[in-house]
Amino acid sequence: DARFYDGVGEALTEADLRPNAMVLRIVRDVDSCRAQLGELLAMENRPTGLIVRSLRLAEIIAETICEHGLDMGRDIEIVFDDQMVSQSQRAPYPHSLPKMSFAEIADRLGEMLSDLAESRELETPHVLVPVEFHIPK
Image 1 (spheres, rainbow, N blue to C red):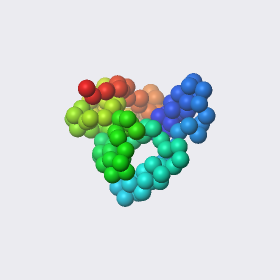
Image 2: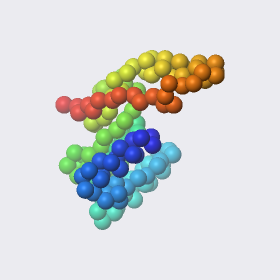
Image 3: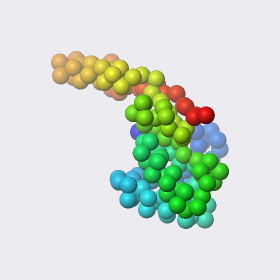
Image 4: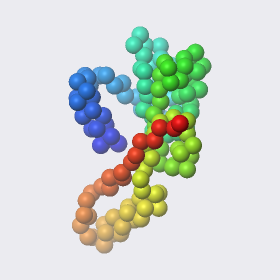
């Protein structure tokens, strides 16, 4: 997540936007998601796009947006990131998809844990999973 936010900060800077051009909210459950979204939608300059961490949150947000009488795609857009590739591939919203399978990611992490258990130095302290951006037709 830290690298994601670092990348967003770099993109805002490259676009000559101020850091507060993006409003960050962290939700813990469905109720807080709906409540915080309601607050955002009531803002004078409400967001025109949302980035969320799962397909399920994207679906909840889409429902809430429609309940507020707004049009998805015209008034506000959603993109999401979810590691459940099989579900994400059928999603109606733009999203990132890992280029590695879940099994490949798990194998790599397993190798790292094994190295640590054997007191071997890690090649790198973390794994960067390449992704591609998918826009549904």
